[in-house]
Image 1 (cartoon, one colour):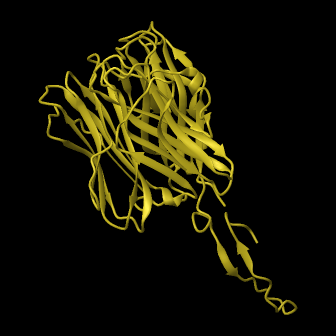
Image 2 (cartoon, one colour):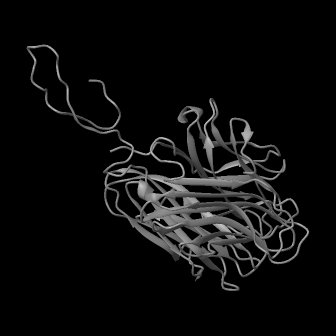
Image 3 (cartoon, helix red, strand yellow):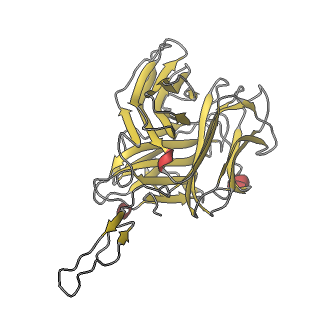
Length: 423
């Protein structure tokens, strides 16, 4: 038994700033010593961010060392009301650099208070036990696609054929900027089968807004060719509807010891009882006690300019991470009634070798316009290699023959598992 090498930090105590310059979020950094130089890591960052005053731009980004990751920045002004927030969701594949930590940063306007909470920074080593372009794939497109109209514009894309039937996590991500039109970003599949969901829809509140759209989904694939890409379009001709960055990532979940997942396209109406609407549920039974990575994601279709949503993740009817129900954080990324805001949460929890139920719950403050949740995604995966095979080195039937005449017989067979040993 061996785990997939990973590092994780969670900051579930609210952190604040009033600075107009970016600074580190306390407790939201993975130290340089957790990385091996020149190895590749999936970095996955999730946080909740809100501001004390409406229409004040709040910023968040990820840095390695002192260098910001290209276009990882969120700039958002929530217009609906004070103390309303959105979620920050970002990923990349990074080749570790000597002496560099990975840190989440945030900023305000120099006066108003920006809050950051329920933060998760995760790094999964992709180099040691997984094979690039076989077990995982990554592509990104950093070229600006400007003045996007109603004709869809392709972003980052990957094409692959799995070696066998298996479950694959596929995530599309984009950084968007729009003026007065709706700007869409979707995960598009073709090849073995076709789909164009999940899809996000955003529109700026003020001119400086830059939104991040995460659209993940787990697909059951066979040994057939599949193409996945991020794709953007707007609701009409515009002089300023831009995609600034695009990424796509795919990971074979069958390379991990245990996993569970569920996805539903259909929209479900949200009620006003706090967390009273079950959006998605899964059951996971780890073979052994292990760290489990859980991600929940959905798009909030407001259908009214003033509606606000709340959501939480629970494991066996207890908040994971703790404090979500008590915090009762409210989310409403913009004040457009047509927007479909992407909301997501990532966490890592150690679970026992028993059956566990994982739920995604949500609600709204008012049902004006019948607000809904759609593209409801939930997955959980143990950070362990499969019981048979995987990354452990195994030598079976290795014999030692002594050369002295007095020791002519073969010693017993030696079996080495896990890391190499001296003999």
